Length: 138
Image 1 (cartoon, rainbow, N blue to C red):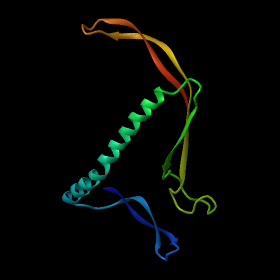
Image 2 (cartoon, helix red, strand yellow; image 1 turned 135 degrees about the vertical axis):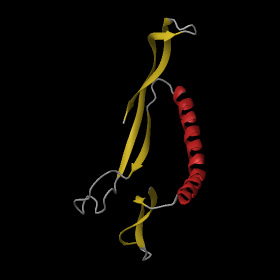
Image 3 (cartoon, rainbow, N blue to C red; image 1 turned 180 degrees about the vertical axis):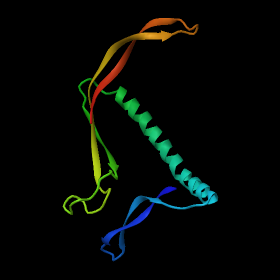
Image 4 (tube, rainbow, N blue to C red; image 1 turned 90 degrees about the horizontal axis):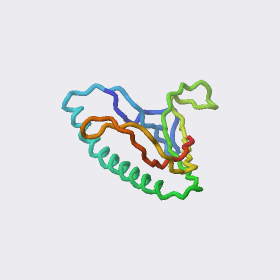
């Protein structure tokens, strides 16, 4: 299986210890070890997912309250890009870079959308709804 663990990197930290970094590492485990590892990670992941869902709920609520002239800019960091190190100037370690995505929401407006939808009896009917949309640039 592939698991995240601290992997040794080249060089030493200021305290004299080897540099390490979280990396996907191939490991051999028994089924019991794998289930134990999985349960341990669930205790970390479930609260994290709950927090993400709560933040999404708050963002959705906040976005609906934005006035039409508002521009919202936020960032989302994604680490560990699939890169190969070729030069020390770029990165001397494989898969070691940070991708900083800036997300910009602007031009909030309400538009009418028309389409077709099946009613309870299965008959297709025309519908018209007002939808709030914003331009999103990344």
